[in-house]
Length: 260
Length: 192
Ligand SMILES: [Fe+2]
Image (tube, rainbow over all chains, first blue to last red):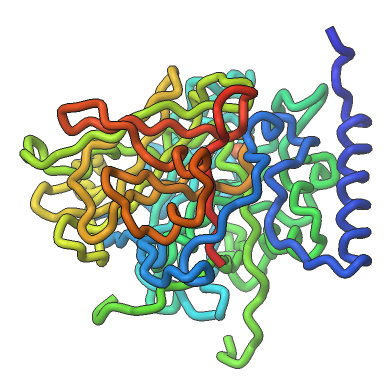
């Protein structure tokens, strides 16, 4: 048996990865918006990332007709009126700090992504998921499932009402804790723009210790995963407001069908 | 909200994690074909890691043209009951072109769909705990003569994208996230 992996070990690896990225930038390498799939401080990645380079496909590889440049569509039948309000899906209200999370979904040219599906899932205020395999001994909340869906508006906007999730432990290393976060799933007009990510809350003391957030080694890119507290979005005597805009990467469809 | 403001950089990807199972999959997520449609094909297989072990917590998404070649899709993959909020599933006639399947405890997935029109492939995305950024790949079915992607690959790499016919309109397609010492790693794609 090897000795248990400590936070100190993982923090040292995180620092090494960050130094390697800084050196690459200094040597003229391109800034990287996304995590490297091979990021050893996150131990689950070790056997689950390809080692071969990705193969170029689509327009840049001479195939402007690639199917991935189009994508699935969703509509009013795919969501119900209560789906965006995670505090109203049960008989009574969940425990925790009621929050509103809102923002816009844009493509990488800054254009709003209209009428597309946004899905979220999260732990409850105690840091427990309503998932059978989450065995963290924190209480489940009978009034909170932690799943939401909505469609973006004409300006690309979305809005959820929920409660602030708690931090939770995991087994990457001894005393590993995830900073509070909400999982987000997003679609653009093209399948190439698909994004699954996590939104974090400003000022969380766990940021520096978390290999998943730190897998984004570029400082400005990592900041883009952290929502802003926006006092103007807070509702008096009701809820706190956070703003988080999302920019989808990947080439957009080369054609836009009428009415989409 | 000025239109002239430079677009901020893209939002980075983060792993789907281990707990998406009660949020993203939906009933009949892999059944794109209307029930009982005579042209239905089945594409199924296992997702494996670099130790050759099946991955029981991967999520596969599929996107494809309709049999007539149209690529505009249709809403209703997650069609809901507005009274109870329950997922009703696709209504049948509309071909949404989209599916989503969580691998089971054995790392297995299955898609029942109609043949894509105009192209010889289905587009797949693979998400999993441990994958910080999802992966694109394709399932090629039958004759793909002249396909620009397949044509660019060495034979052993090309073979990872071509489904194996199992008879009775069933096709086997395994996804290997990493070379395991025996089996070639699946070709994954970058679109820029
Ligand atoms: Fe999580």
